[in-house]
Structures are given as structure tokens and as C-alpha cells.
Length: 140
Image 1 (tube, rainbow, N blue to C red):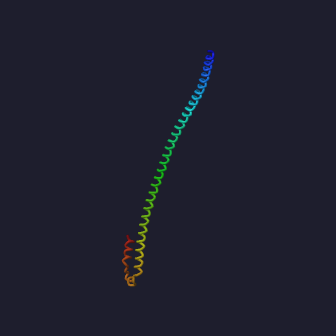
Image 2: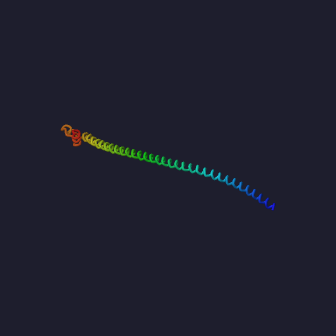
Image 3: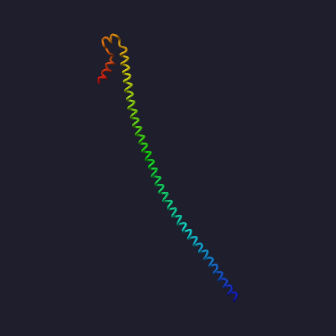
């Protein structure tokens, strides 16, 4: 009977030490879980902050892209207006050159006709038709 009591005391002490050991392990694991939960919460906060920053950056990028497109459209419109002005100026200049060319050809014809006049035409003061047209245009 004595042996049984010793075994029971030994078992109680052994069980108590095992329980204490398990409680220490449990406490360490609870601390680890608590620490991991805190790290998880911190990480979630950082993730939310990063998501908000990312959204803010996307908004800014979209804003700048819109401004860039707007500037390109404005530049395109400006170039289009300049092209229209230059095209109009080209048409006006072409018309002026055509008018000058016609006038030059006409005056050349008048000079040639005057040079071809004979001596009798000079004495009788007869002028070619081209010269009479020239005089009529000058009087207008």
C-alpha cells in the first residue's frame, strides 16, 4: 500500500509538472497568437493605407492623363486653325499670282501689238485693240 501511495504522489507531482509545462506552452502560444493578431492588424492597416494611396495615385494619374489629352486636343485644334489660315493665305496668294500672271501676259500682248504697228498706223494714230482694252481698264 505504501508503494501505491508513492506512485500516486509521484503521478500527482508528475501530472502537476506536466500541467504547468502545458500551461506555459499554452501561455506562450497565446502570446504568439496575440502578437500575430497585432501584426495582422498592423498589416491590414498598412494594406488599407496602400490601397488608399494607390487609389489616390490612380485618380491623379487619370487627372494628368486627361490634362495631357486635353492639351493634345488643344494643340491639335491650334494646328488645325493654323493650317486653315495657311491654306487660306495660300489660296489668296495663288489667286493674286494668277491675276498678276494674266495682267503680265496681257501687258506683254499690248507691248507686242504696239511694236508690230506699222508706220502708217503711227501717223494715223491707230492703236491695236489690246491697247484700247488696256486704256479702258486703266480709266476704270
